[in-house]
Length: 490
Image 1 (cartoon, one colour):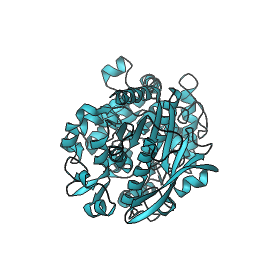
Image 2: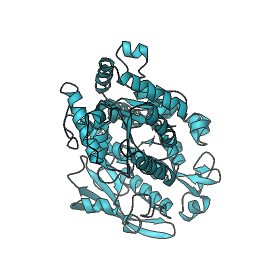
Image 3: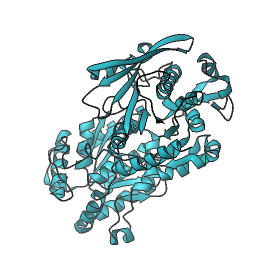
Image 4: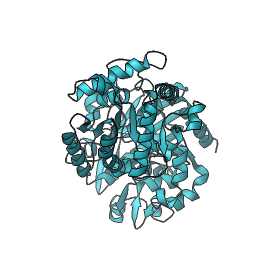
């Protein structure tokens, strides 16, 4: 099957979040099932800089925002990406500094509506053969609001292949004013409550929901949650209408990149069958030294709690900072946290690190190698997200033998088994789960985890159970394959 996989980012070429990881790993897993896959991305400046060779496969002129843009479709080559890569090259819209969505100063690009409307239109033309590149898709898989209009454009093309649309996070809706809808020259028939109209604006994410033939989210629980007002962001009604075409397929992880047995970012490699306790201890020592601390025996014995993520309330960072001082007073636990986000939470974390220099380690920003070292060197990983469509860090933590502490929501609920007495007894426990999003509940759950940490035999059994879990992409890729086949049979 020929699959065109459209996304706005893909690791390691350009990444701001979990979508980038998925766009790297899922197409690769689909290829291993025997499919012929092409990943298509905007030709951002940073991607072109990483691609030494590219070939022009086709070009066209597209009208958008009162402009006529000449668009080239490039076949790009880079050793850093495992799947054949296509780029939509429009220098006026994509040859810029900054990340895919924001300027270097952190503000959104003023013309994001135009940028991703044009990208979606170009993807649809490639998929349908209107831009002839010598290859035409059997099915199109688009992702998140930046590609939401792909399915809408395909709906107007006579030779269009069927499409599937994945919602990675419903909170990011791609909302733009009606004036932009008119200025971009989008078809008037799309403007309705059954189309892209969203409270007098228009939503590119809604376009994907409405016009795609199949709809997926990134975990079974999240597929249920978004049908409710609490998690539906005003889309719950139209999602309920589309429920027959909605599925929840759990994201996987790249088991080659995230593998403690071969991870080059680690001080010492280990596996479930080979010195996992010694390996974690060596990486804990290296992690402490990374933050300028001498790894004394007392520090190595003290439980180390890690966090990696955006410093925003969705990720529960306010819950974490509220319980750290209490836990420092009542337990020997230490903390290591990296991430960026809300300036207030950044300042609070930095002040905690100043106040407790030997017990709270903070790095503002993101460092991929340090993230791997934290997953290996921490004893617990805290992830109290208020909502989490899938989540990846809890999966990395399980693989690295670092039991996660999570709130029972979305993909966290689907992937972590609470270490209660029953689950510990039958050896199915993999982490710690709490059911109320509050500082009190988070603190109580961490304290419960720290008590178990003091019981070596039970703790080792928990680590072994966590590391035995398989969250590779093969099973999820097979589920997507079934949906692609279903689309083609209609």
